[in-house]
Image 1 (spheres, rainbow, N blue to C red):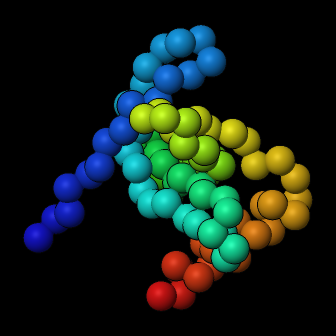
Image 2: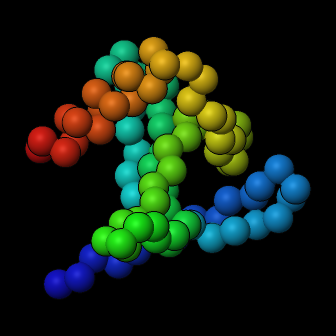
Image 3: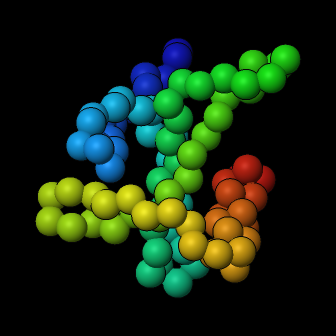
Length: 88
């Protein structure tokens, strides 16, 4: 049975809405920081690999705000979280 895509609406900095597929959420080991992995359906390369985006998220009322991953230390922590689910 094929799993149904979970679609979300993202508002960019220009106030325009775009639809994306929610892939998964990641939560840091200390439960203090959350990340969202999503796709806009873009493909790249000869193998038609799908491009995935990862963003830090912060809940603000009933909205979720997205922030870039700020530095190499944070990116290394995100990579550890991704490896954990890849090896599950």
